[in-house]
Length: 285
Image: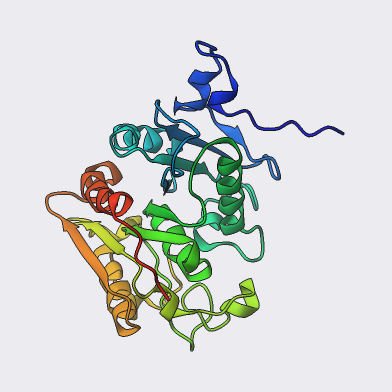
């Protein structure tokens, strides 16, 4: 069987309608290796194969799966800063009819959403002139859960990390099992926790000042409720304290006047990411 090569925008003649699906806000693309999952992008309209590859920003949706809306919220950012924005879609119902959380917890008993994302990044590199050895990762709420757990497994793939308002956090804790801690990380995922690999990574933790409604939080069976607080403000502070205990210097941005609202905190997120996509990379251990 002949495998088709992914077309890039510059493979098409000027004025071809296909260019509009491959630059600006793109169509959704099914992941070739597992079409249960898909992704869309914003690609700067002047994107060309010349020069250094463009930075890649990955932004991960929350439980409501508003991937396209989130991608569109980064459209101007993509154009202004000449970076490609990729928004994955992890549909609900993958591991069962009532599954909404498996992608957040990295679901070692079901599928590996971290590996799904890396496959999407590889596909993006096959079609666009984009840097994928390291990329910038942001997620909010359920996406914030995904983002900080992804960082434990793949710290060397990240150029920066922005974690927004996770409802449940995983602490670097060698005495507590996944997902509350990291004691069995190697057994679950084949890699051990390595806090040193996250030191020097630019990290933002972000939450709304009024994000204190605990009724919206999924239960954690009481295992860590005392250690991590009872609302998202408490939990992101607990994550920061835990990371700082391990030498990871995470900044905390508390956005005044807002609750659990991704789009209200995005200006703060984008100010952080702007500095990262424009900054020269500093080698890390």
